[in-house]
Length: 310
Length: 306
Image 1 (cartoon, each protein chain N blue to C red):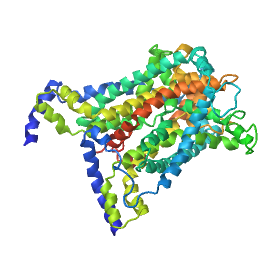
Image 2 (cartoon, rainbow over the protein chains, first blue to last red; image 1 turned 90 degrees about the vertical axis):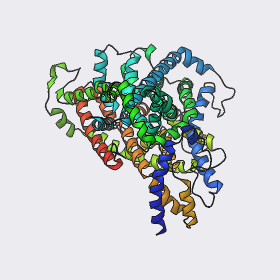
Image 3 (cartoon, each protein chain N blue to C red; image 1 turned 180 degrees about the vertical axis):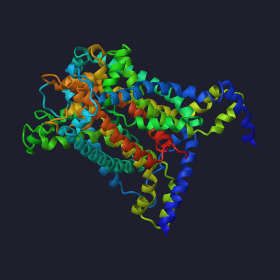
Image 4 (cartoon, rainbow over the protein chains, first blue to last red; image 1 turned 135 degrees about the vertical axis):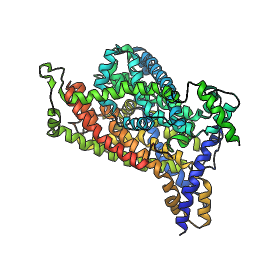
């Protein structure tokens, strides 16, 4: 009896709380800090029940990273488990001899270009989906969903032919376009969710003050969308920084390779230089892991505002 | 009153922006054009190729094939093997990732010293790619310098063990590597949803004398249901479609033991140059996934008015 009451109350207040969270300025939501969403109330969780599993999981997460750093920093032939004295020879080799300086620049270009394209196109489209009822809207939403089920690997042949027609094979643009297209459906769904969470009344109030739709959007909606945009943009960047198959298939000359492709060739080399491979891995990991460390708070806030509530 | 006032400027806003009818179409057109050109059109060409013999190494055979590709597919042991492995791979990965992700989210949702840094650290593999995951785990699995060597030094196991070339261990070796970067995805989505559960629910429940287990079963789980359904289906599709890790870690081997359907397609189309047959495989894969998408639509009631 009691339990049913709890569950009913749960869904009712849950929905209401979801709405209020959406309306609150994102900055406030981020600063909720400890206390909110803590575990069940009542007796405190015993500390060991937190630290023991967390410690084990941290070990699982960090040992692989440590192993890569170890190989990247210790001299070739060493079997020490501590990378000391450290050497920079592996980094020197991958960065200068194996061309990772060029791959790094290419990856950065692809990552930033797809971030900008994905976010801009999804922002415009997401606004239309969130604020207007128009003919074809439901059909488009259905297409967005179905597109989630098109495997990128399976589209390689026709995409390759399209890019050959457009004379974009072996151009970084082919990768940027392919990454953007495959990022778009999810980004559109996410951004339209974020925009729906910004009350239309706020925009209408700005119209009263004499703003046009565009100015009202920039002044009122955009600042509130910041966590959502960070989430979507970082998703697009990390995804295209990491993604391998399109770059592998569409880029043929070595000066166009992105980092994952460069890494793949290092893995497949006749005699694998494990130190160089590990150093290449560190070069590949550092930008995304740093980006991620900074944005993970926004990412969680962004998801709790938009994604899960669809 | 305020709302009534707000109605009128809405009209002017629309007029300035080019009329209420055209604006949404204008806004959505870049997305539609990109998706028509680079998703819909390629998808249709795949359907078209699947009905043709199309092999660049055997051009004399090229031409209309009818359903030949599809009947060949039904008799193809490798196709069935890859389909079974796909199911095994997706099932194992997704269920383990969900279980671990849920546990991890519940832990880092508590208040404790070092929570911020722990979250950043345990979620960090999410940012890591398939090829990078491969790089890292190849270093760990390396038979002469990897973890097994140090274990053998310490008297556990034997020297020269290569988990990636033994058909008995390669599956779990790949599963572990993929878990490493897949669990954070679930943990992040579930944590996001956990944070929207109002705290007073738990306080009310605890006043009523519900223990922590009952609070979890009757408040937390029902609240998380939608997030779990959504993220599980999304992740299942991604695990099915993702080729990066298996392509670079095992190459689908040894002896096809870790070939998923998309990997089989990539091998047939790109290395075997048999685009017609690869397209037929693609079509079948898409139909299977579309079935999942319908399930997804029904379960999440997506796209309707909330």
